[in-house]
Length: 230
Image 1 (tube, rainbow, N blue to C red):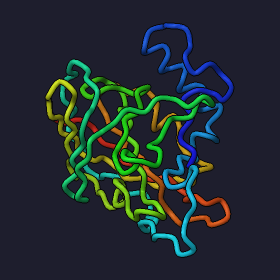
Image 2 (cartoon, one colour; image 1 turned 30 degrees about the vertical axis):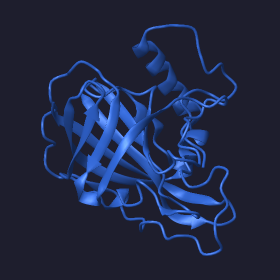
Image 3 (cartoon, rainbow, N blue to C red; image 1 turned 45 degrees about the vertical axis):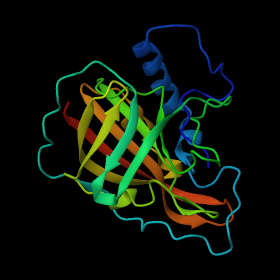
């Protein structure tokens, strides 16, 4: 599967040193211009072969948006990388590894191997407790092993809560604001990766029907959440 592009293909994946915020904002501008590769995020695709009877993905459902005013965000905290995630509503408990960029500027996703069925944090996004969106990716399934870490991600609903443990030992609580399903050719780069004024979280996987010819799912599921307590 092809992951979201954090920098335009063909650019140096290790740009000159600059402030983290400036680099992040430049990456967002590029995402809006070169969003096609970003949209694909085919977490069940890259380098895999699938059986003739693919494992069913969660049903694609209309976007679900919280109707009530979201809970206020917690004050900003010292940033720390996420190292584990626990989502009781869908039975997920996983370590969170780190993902950087591929040579073409796309975000790395867990490769086949011991970390394939674990979640992964994109290191170009906000750390836990930091203003901005922190992005955690996970595969939906594989032909070899069946359902993967985010197989049930689309079942989350507004007001569901989950926790992320940071490397400094803090456990941060997040509340789901909305769950959206997007065609991969209409992925809203700015909404997902753009800057925010509070600590937020994006959980991303594949979704919708499986395209046998392309050997990937046609949609992406994105969970939007905000941090509600340190």
